[in-house]
Length: 215
Image (cartoon, rainbow, N blue to C red; front, side):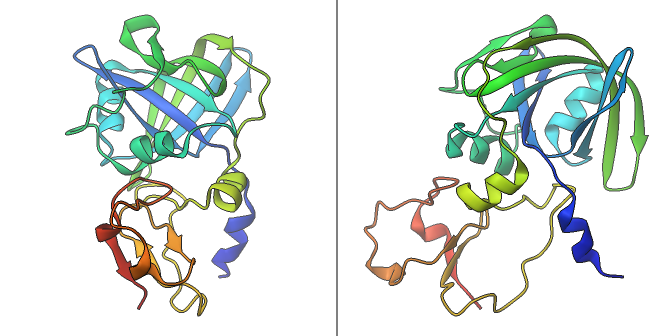
């Protein structure tokens, strides 16, 4: 089987919001799609290990912020590569709470959805949450960020809990020198050791000490 065919399936990029004891949390997901129109329903795929997934199972509701191409990379990093179990992800983030303390971003999103879970399908490593959209709001006409745009322009990678995660093959290029152990960003700029000590990963903002030489 040629699994590279799966790489041609297109995706978006979304911030899935949930709450734990009225404290907002959330994660980045690329698998959100509409499954019916009357009434409007969507499906979201999340890894069982995600703290957000556990929170949604508890309250049976979630929000979807549809991020745009102008979203700050550090927001993607914070919500995509760190756990809400030990990180308050909404610190210094512009957001508002909708019904039942669900968080939605207020900047650089085209709109948000408030979803009520009707069914959960266990598919092994992940759960698919099928939910009715009970409220929504458009905030802008900025183009939504696609997963292809994220990879091509932001140079981001999929976290290991993402449905589309795949290990990068070895020896991709002689120009690849150092790889971020948190988000997978590959530094291709030449002499890595000559970078200043306060240099940080352009995607997830961790220090250069979290980079490892390519093997």
